[in-house]
Length: 379
Image (cartoon, rainbow, N blue to C red; front, side, top):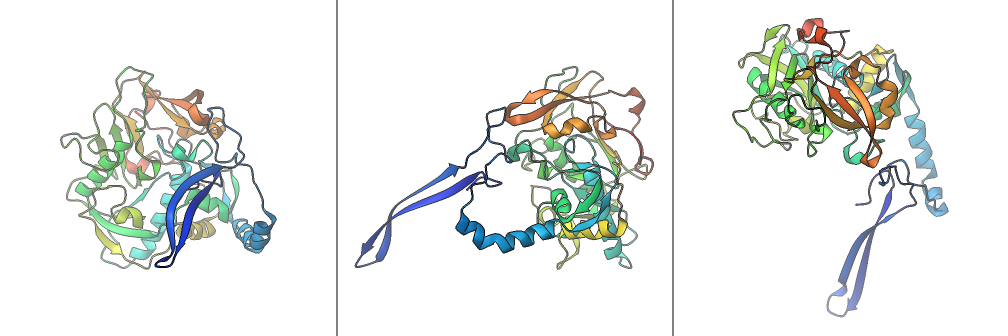
């Protein structure tokens, strides 16, 4: 594999021999990668954006028309946003970027289910922060400034070619769905301030947030599921205060939920065996659903709803996580309440600390119907 963002070339060398019996035969093979000229990040690793562009006139001449067509498409205006849309804190707190995806998905779900037997069930939305650092490096974050939205902006928000799906689930399945999502976090020790928050083997695209309900994750205990979805602690429960419209969710409750085809078909090890598919193919790509919503609702102002939080630790407890250095201008955002930056980390990331119990006045967890416009709702 040749790396990402053009950082490497992938090379396969074959030694061939011509025989009378078999024709050409492979006698040996070697595979390797060759790094292009790069600038190393402060941590000594190659940055995704640092690879120098090495051009070959024959190649550039051959693709110039297709390349220009791609640029023309990416620069097409779609709408506008009144808020910055970024994923720098999306693994630890609610974000405007995911709020926009939730809003678009719920809008689609409401129109698809209108007049169906499922139309009167509560509607939920599941979405993950796809571009959120990790192996992609310190530049691999969604970061769209307030103002015009272009085609490229929407693919920055939703980079995978997933198609959208609708399911009917029970309250019991919803509980397990969120318990699986809670595997994204490590168990924390009360009163400690120098401990990691995120599980190193849990990719961001497998961390689902669910809009339409309010809930909390108690990180004082172990996770029920492992980072790849295996049930590792059958007695463990991290999910707390799961409610819809201020009422606790019961196992027999029924909901409709909109997600993507990867998750609906079991991707990420989510326990969704009891889910019932209620919107079959052909369904549009999720990015096209977001695009349609932005065009109709522009300008959008997707303020985070703060419907979930991390809890279970006393005031004065903290844990660290890594994000991109582009997060610094957003540390004063409402969604960054309780987050402080305290230095660089390996690979060029920015290391931040999340404090628990930072705002005593916000320890009362709100019902799902009364949270729009509130400040940070973490433990």
